[in-house]
Length: 346
Image (cartoon, rainbow, N blue to C red):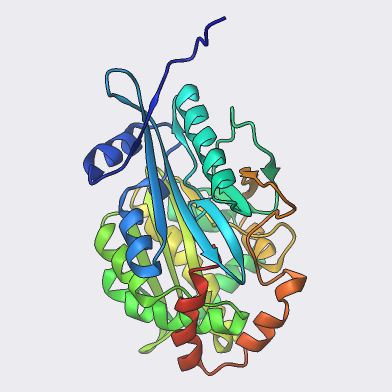
């Protein structure tokens, strides 16, 4: 009996970024994580090996795409991830194309003896691979009116937003805020015991996505206290990276940061605020829940020939010594070593 599925040829992205991005723009379920610029950003700033595949029919028309990145080290292991350091990026396209691309990814994982293949997708339909339930996000529907959103919050939350305003804290947005963003973000990551992404990573983001990437910083005078960076895609904004200095907690600078981003998104016509990934039941999850959004699972699909269920994280018992040590490092040393280490922890 013949196979009824169309025979699709696998192509490797070789400079045809326009065709790739046009496909992403048209594809259902696509995200900013699928755009071709990530290939160069990850390669140039983190030294990643990027395998960007398209599945084409007999006429040469693309039917699906999959960005896949290899992250490998002797200490932390060998991973194929779509897409590392981000929350989405799994296969797009027709069911047949997705099958073809996922099959090739599994074959590559077997061939190269990867510890884990992880397809980070919000649309698991038709992907016959086990689901990881270790991460979720929180989505908040935004009304068209800022005042309506503020009134919808509980009294305690409204008070926490007003407090930093009364203290004279202000918020600034724009690509020119990326330096202040990194100043705050790198300190926050050190205090959490987590290696920070390189400064050049965010410089490249600002250059590659001038219409999509949004940088915002909360200030007390000229001192940055809290900062975030996220992306607009269609009618949704995702807060991908955010942090606040420890000394800003009594001022609730992080509350003003998120509120200001919501104001900005409503003004830009965005209708969904995505708080970004978190671990269910953790402190970050509780922070995000208080804004009134709904939990949404991130059904990432995985393939492993062994017992590996996730890339290394600060919560792993085997690496628990790492965060304790990292928090003790001077900031200058953490910022110098962090980018060299984080490239191996997707």
